[in-house]
Image (cartoon, rainbow, N blue to C red):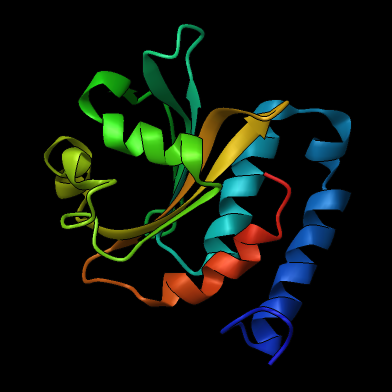
Length: 168
């Protein structure tokens, strides 16, 4: 085991390789934002071994979260544009404001995410998630969502310590 609770040496090595890949990626270095975002979601899906990763940003008046990239490992496709109204998920928004990481093993029963079950999780068969807030100058401007499809996944819990060390 390495210094992260529940994270194996192999996990830590894969995480370090991902950081090297991110810091040497030509699109990221050159400032190609669209391609960089796709690279980030692909690497996150691989490192955390989840079938879907999304990056959502608040709009200017903070009334909606807009998906700027969704990577689906099963189809190896990227999509974007979906919006969620913050008015339908105040507990989730409050949780994002108060926590850097949301580790949810059951999106249906967790009070932070239950309000999104019918609107979002059910239609995509999402059972668990690991979310990390994206902050600018201390303010939450978005979230990167790592989604587990199907049954509950307690394996995301051990990966949450990797996210806790990331500069989000």
